[in-house]
Amino acid sequence: MKYCPCCGYDFKNKDYKKESKKLLKRYDNKTKDLIVNTFSVVSKFESVTEQTIYMFLQGISKIPTDVVFEGLKIYYKKSLNKSGKGLNYLKGIIFNVKENEKKYKEILDKTIGVVPEEFPDEHKS
Image (cartoon, rainbow, N blue to C red; front, side):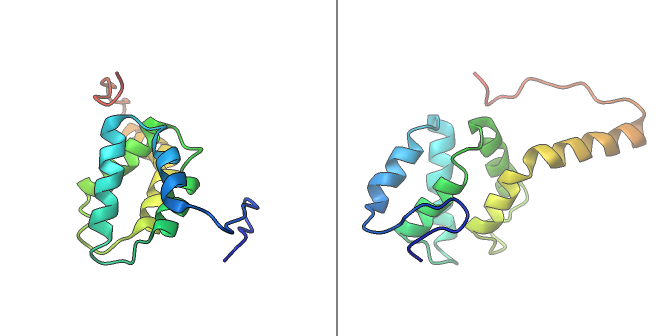
């Protein structure tokens, strides 16, 4: 694949490692370490090349850092890294974090009758 039909990006003659480092710079240290750790964990059961890493980072580049961090926490909390779920599954989790959070609050509101108190996120500083 030399041309992305979704975003129109041209992949010809790319230095994927250099481009990936540029994309990783936008994240804070906690999130960056978790992303890099995820690549090494996923590489045990899925082929992870420099191009797939770049395409994953390019795919989530428009998502805010706190949402990416929450998606990674969900990925590890549910032990999806041990069940063979790869980068595409993780990308789906990250894209749907906010939508799933709203549904979860609606379900809690119906069962409890009151929306639970929100606590400050430990990730935000």
